[in-house]
Image 1 (cartoon, rainbow, N blue to C red):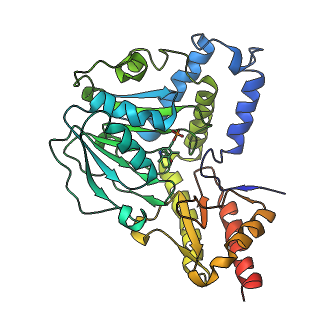
Image 2 (cartoon, rainbow, N blue to C red):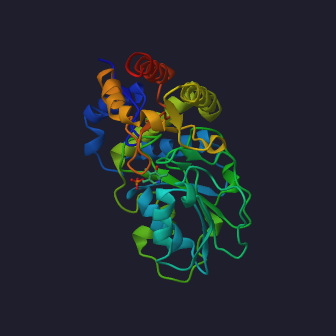
Image 3 (spheres, rainbow, N blue to C red):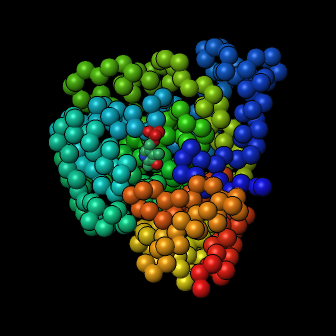
Length: 357
Ligand SMILES: *Cc1c(COP(=O)(O)O)cnc(C)c1O
């Protein structure tokens, strides 16, 4: 049976990306060697790295003055690298979910943290919209897409201080103005590739302002000087990221991706809003285009477990909600075809019509 992969991360990748990675695992460009067994400093891998960086800049529209890094340690490593490299006096954070809270916890190891607004009062079901960013903070940190709670910041915020964004789960899902950001980072395993590599887009002039000594592996400047090759980079994940970026460019880049994504999300949210038994958990104006969170209405709560097995039997994978929200979450990242979204909607309707009187 065809599987429809709604997993939150690691998550769905385009079929052709998986196929070309599989090919390079066996034989990279007819070299007779696997991409996994060649030197990262040899010309074959250097070409992969260079093209991955060039495509990343091209497809996202990264202006001059920025560097793109591919590092190990995931997005979670960036939770500490950001304050290590930037926090002098104090940092400002927007608290919009579990990942934001984790980022805040790490920043507090380096100095005072001003939480400018939080949506914890309503289990992170919305994005706070009235707050002031202190202009004496060293930076302002946001999580643009809250993977667990299904909320998203779709506008580029005007910040008087460098804006730092965790874009793990919505990078490359839509165009945005990179020049408004000081740092953009994330794990690759939602929209770009397999787990094991994080991307960091960084405006070089915000670095070098803190006094503290920074261990080499955690110092952005060291990674910039060495073109992400200070140590052995995650070669295979970087290869797959390059393949994803080629695929993205071919289908029309981030503008086209945005049209497809808003189409998919619109279909699914409409089905939820028009359902007798399901309801969304995020406030409408804050809804994520990537992670659609929904539950059963109070009077139908007892059907939740039944629906999960019903959906599973019909090939739906990864639709169980995160424990902090419950219910269901359909992650509909870039590589998710609209046919899979429609298949989920059909299963929801079938369940509603045949199982819930
Ligand atoms: C998945 C995720 C993370 C964690 O990424 P790791 O690579 O596992 O450290 C951080 N932030 C957001 C928004 C995520 O979705």
